[in-house]
Length: 285
Image 1: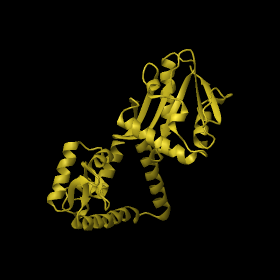
Image 2: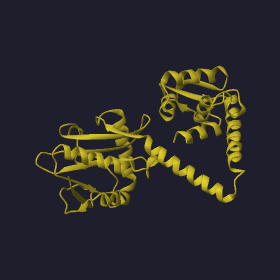
Image 3: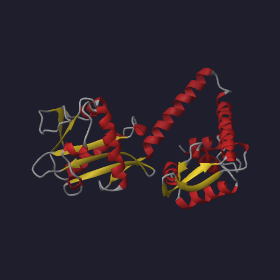
Image 4: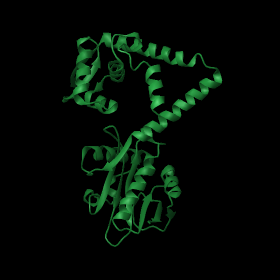
């Protein structure tokens, strides 16, 4: 792993003071790239690049002094700081874009077609696995901003996928049921960006119940849903539950496949959830 990291950082020029033959290092060039032609909120840049707030501010000030970026209030909300490229910044962005293509071609050009295919496939696999390793899962109060962000995205997606739309109020679960000792709410994050959630209810004398399991499209295929499910099951077992159950909608084929592959078996309906077509249960060790 360390040898691979050294090779990559050297090959892409990450150690150079002048990245891609420009007069700024990689960190500044990457930030310029992420701001892009449409601009970006400073808070979003910090989350996306996982940068310390002070360091990000210093980078932005350097780009401002160079006449490439302006930082000011966001449109419609003066409390939100937004970074935008100037005309000179857009020209520099285009130049970086072209030179990045040139660097990529310099890596591929010496290789045969077959080896290029192998390298690109290997890069995609490494990127996939590295992204999976960046996802962290931890408890979160369902009223916190990260949790609310996930729940809003969860509701928006279900509203578009369910035949009858989706109203979270009709699914029969309240926030107070998802905090200890009544339950647990988990959030999955990449850096500080929330990319998934899941909850478990622990009603006394009844099986535990999985609720609100959702994963952002940006990290699907990385096993995040399975990790959330496994962690919720672990918490339920630690709380004394002998089994866990859940319900789901027939349109969520990928969720149904996940539950079946994780050892859940279909059971008769145990509630009157208007959005449910399938009910599943699983014994816990």
